[in-house]
Amino acid sequence: RVLTPGTLAEPELLDGKLENLLCGVYWQGDQGAAAFLEVSTGAFWVRHWSDPALAWEDISLAAPREALLLGDQIPELVRQRLEASTSCTTDVERSLLEGGGRAAEALEHQFGGAKLRGFGLEPDDAAVVAAWSTLDYAREAARVELAHVREIEVRESSGAVVLDESTVRNL
Image (tube, rainbow, N blue to C red; front, side, top):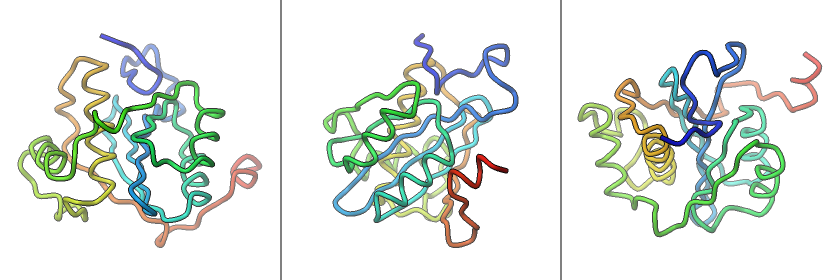
């Protein structure tokens, strides 16, 4: 068992006031996605972007404890800022990532056979690769099945007011 900042689930090791997020960032062409997993509670969601600056704003507001850099197409802005701001950043080689169909099948199996479309995801979506790679990393590191992770949520910024870092800091 390997303990990393984003895969801790033991209550005595966690700060009860903060989420302990593991974030997996994946970029496919000009479209990016990230999966956020809170291992202890099973909270699991994804975000999509086409702009690296917006991606960084979203990721910085989530304040993940650990970041997975999935593949080699991640924009330099996002890569540099993640490396500077998270306590642990891990590069995951593209060859180790689950490709479209396999990642979709694996996620559907994780969710008890529920189809990804029911969660608002398409099988060839970059978020599917990010989600499965993040979940698989957490399972391998923690050496547990994470059976309590039974659903995924697509969170888009269109239905929310986004606050920048300085506003959040001053609140």
